[in-house]
Image 1 (spheres, rainbow, N blue to C red):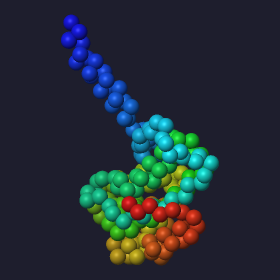
Image 2: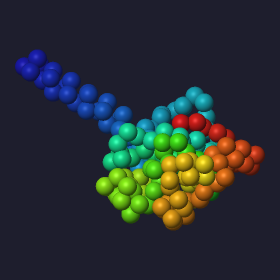
Image 3: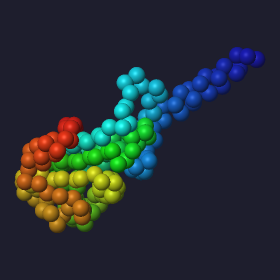
Length: 179
């Protein structure tokens, strides 16, 4: 009789393990940026510190119907730190977009006209901007990939170049993370 219960116990164990490995989004970006909980990390996060990061996003997905996971990294950054006690007011993030990621920040109308589908990143980008993340397009990529300002989502900015924006943000204390 105990032998018949063994498969049930195994299933229960693996179900609990799977639940402990579950990722969750929020509290800042509710629909994107799921992260794992890390119980009792040895390297402690200083929740009193300001975290300023600039993500260098030069690569887009092969499909124009996919979210750019590199852009979603900004949502993971915000959610992960907020879930672990860092106040949102201490989290500063910027995305520098260039290269094949350039078309990933187009507004829905321009994206649909060019690729036949709305921009799958539009909602994510708007959520990021609504929460203070700067989205900055390289002006050189804007020109070389024919993505003018009017094709961008309202609130996105164009810089002279990705290099210029990266230098300026790093001069302002942002730490570079190249994706």
